[in-house]
Image (cartoon, rainbow over the protein chains, first blue to last red):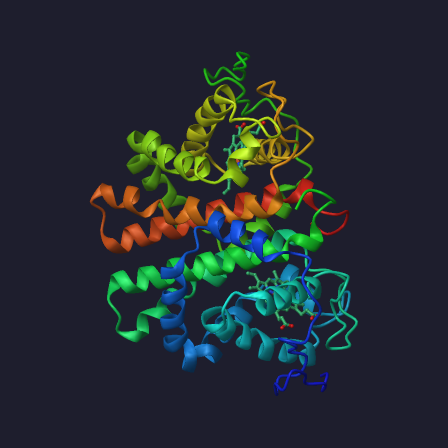
Length: 199
Length: 199
Ligand code: HEM
Ligand code: HEM
């Protein structure tokens, strides 16, 4: 596991606030937010979701990691080509994945956030995959799976968000906000995959 | 508006069953369905959703078309470059879009379905955009907006699905199934946008 924690964080490889600038502009982000139908109420719902999820992050990750571990075509991207899963890689990414749940709920979607979205995007592609954790896994997470995982990452959230004793209506609002936030990010992360002029 | 209805359908340009074969295999589709977490219960929920939506399709389209019409960066792709929306284009696509709602709920996701998914994908990209309706609009629907529209296309569905007097639990199941079906298709439609080897 890489040990260069940055940005004052204790999570190895988590570099929020210190990565280079995204090629996507804040004006483009605004258009994208409007297209996802992401509004101020969604930001408020996410803040409440963040409170409910705070002490459940490990349980959420157990579900998602179990899901990935059960599918050879997914876990392959945490493995050496034709090899077994790289346990240190899984563990290192898991810490950053947990932080991502918190960030999605609590961080303002500003320039710093946009810049880290770009970095996460690149870490799924040949530009930066494997670099942070110094591993010899596959070169790229296929775009189709990146998009597909919106399914489980969204639908498995409901039981966790239901544990906060909020009304059914508020849970629905949080589910919608979570869906929009995930879709917004996957739309951003698709950029380095796209043919020139088609993103 | 184009008038070459094909495949025995009365919808101009709707060519389900007569388009060429998708480069995606049924085995790849299986992996993708598993990644989206799409299962038999989802197919059953979609069939019920199809019944509920059957006489509401025009109302759903009113909502979605209103959403697109309100955003210049979206409606641009139904317009000539820097020109006003092409009304015949909007109207022709609307008919096929309505059929797509029905198909998503009722068709088996088999080879024929996969082939038409490929055709829909290409119609959003330079390969086939504008060809079906013989218009001079933009060359490509940007990938980021294709993904982003998962937000409105999913979240606006709840009130329509709630009108069938099914239990809240069944409505949730239909919403989940609809989400997964849309995500599955957008994952398929992203193929012609991707850099070689990254889809
Ligand atoms: C909704 C879809 C997805 C989300 C939200 C997601 C989220 C994340 C996050 C937050 C990170 C850590 C970012 C950081 O370094 O701070 C990450 C890294 C990673 N993800 Fe994903 N991911 C998704 C889809 C996938 C899929 C389908 C795979 C394939 C199995 C995958 C494999 C990986 C790998 C291998 C890394 C480590 C990349 C590296 O730095 O070498 N992800 N992902
Ligand atoms: C969830 C996202 C989307 C879905 C489910 C969707 C669905 C569809 C469907 C079903 C069709 C007709 C396919 C056929 O010919 O049988 C279509 C065509 C079209 N869509 Fe989309 N679409 C999405 C995103 C977008 C976005 C973001 C835009 C940009 C404004 C867009 C613009 C168009 C255009 C211009 C056509 C006509 C293409 C042509 O044949 O020339 N779509 N879409």
